[in-house]
Image 1 (tube, one colour):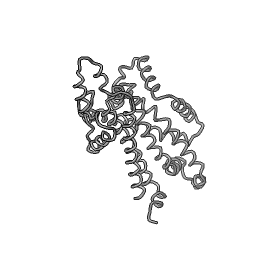
Image 2 (tube, helix red, strand yellow):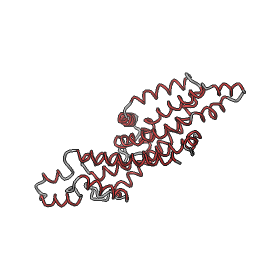
Image 3 (spheres, one colour):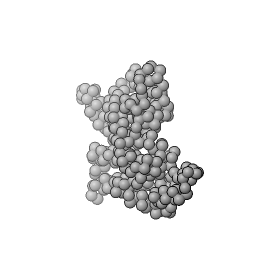
Image 4 (cartoon, rainbow, N blue to C red):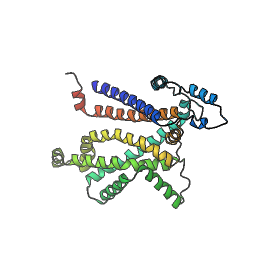
Length: 304
């Protein structure tokens, strides 16, 4: 139980740190959303000041952060300066789109990468192993933005139809980004397990190779694979924002970019905090899975 409590406290501290850093960085950037209004001769200075008071920009930094944090704890993120709508309403549909994209890509990536990684570990240096190891090495070297641009280029070159705003190209791009790490990590973990002395003992007993690989070797490799799950979610969260912008998927990515460029601070803070919450929840889930699967952690966490 202490392990779970430590992870919960760590997750809360992470979110608190993200909120402080995000708020401070937005404040340190020069100018604000109302700068364009100031230079517009058709907007009187009194109107600009009323807007400044409405959004609390006339208050000091600590007061504004305290008010924002209290509202965020209640699920209220204020009003968007650009859209004049509640931020919670504005990001609700976008967050669902991002979660949809990330969930489908996560399912596709792991359902393909883990079995293929195990199979290649069982048959090292085969044709499939060489092909997948080489192609994943190339994919790992490509920036996320370039992967999205390559999908756009391929769709145009082969006349595959519209790509912008479609789920399949976005899932494909995100899966191509996340697949290499999961595949190579699984292959390495299972291959190391197959070199263990207990594997030689199982083979000497005449146990079928498929059972040795997929039952015993894979099970002994679960800890590093589960640990990778949290890192995979972190990569998906950051990569999804880039893929969404590149392929015009209507998720948090385009909204966050627009809000940063226009200095729409309430939307930026809410989007960053929501993305961080998704990431932290994924890491916490990975830690809990590791706690459930590894009895050594439960023994260390027991009474002393």
